Image 1 (cartoon, rainbow over the protein chains, first blue to last red):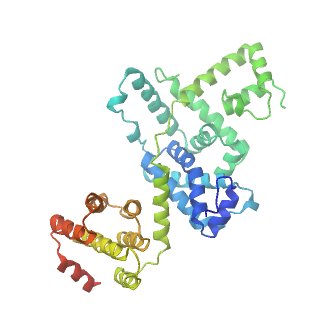
Image 2: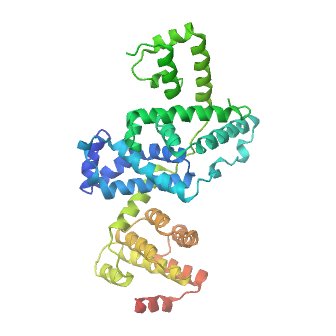
Image 3: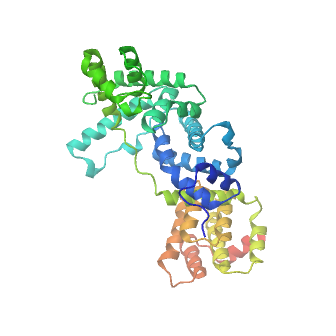
Length: 186
Length: 201
């Protein structure tokens, strides 16, 4: 019988993963994979790279579960985000920060005027976010899109709440100025 | 609760945007009342709402099926857990283990390795993946998942995929026969080549 259920806390699951419990690993994976995927993707990599990042992140969780210490204060969620964030930074550095647009190609069935406009907007927004400095982009993705508190984002990025607030202010200001120049986006 | 004045309002708006549920330690009704009474605040709030609406267009594409991704990760974990050993001793070790599915596994390993070797693509990652698949008496789906990670080369994945498809579409055929047919048809490898590989091991 499975000794793991969806109600178990992240910390309990990690404790089981340290003991090589694959059910606990599967449960934690199911809980966080989509969240990590959307964060990785919005940090500026393409879909395949985002999936690779998710898998590598979960692999690291399996390998290094014993390194997560609750007494250090970091939640499992922020620990996962930190691993994924570091990997996304590596990927972007390797690809020299080119903007991945592979997932944005319009498909035949999407080519209604309305969808074209929406996809055009999506492209502009994606590009504008990708063009932000790395830490501004990360703060925006974590707080605005992933719903982390500024404190949690600070944990992920190894920063302070004040610094995160500064990054968010600058990110939003830059985005507004950038998107204002794109017809029909703002 | 924070008392809302223009300075506090502008700061919170510039950090959190127009979604008041993100604003820490404020009473949303008080903020809305403040906006109603203040033209500057109203204009700034409208601007922030416009930006938030634009940011909402940034959708994320669908992720591959989460179950499949978990399976792939678990396959990689299994591969990592194995010691790096030459292929032949591992085969021999497995051959000593009598059990259900052994013939299938060994056949898959031989078949898979032969295909890769036939193209000069044999490498530790591929063979490790096959060993994992065999040791776990895996289903074809499991093997596919492992191979996605292990075979960095798309061509290798395609080769394995062809073999797996052949196995799936011919359920009545023994796996040994399927592999023989596949190797002979596709890569002109015969049993002698496989035996030769064993002796080289």
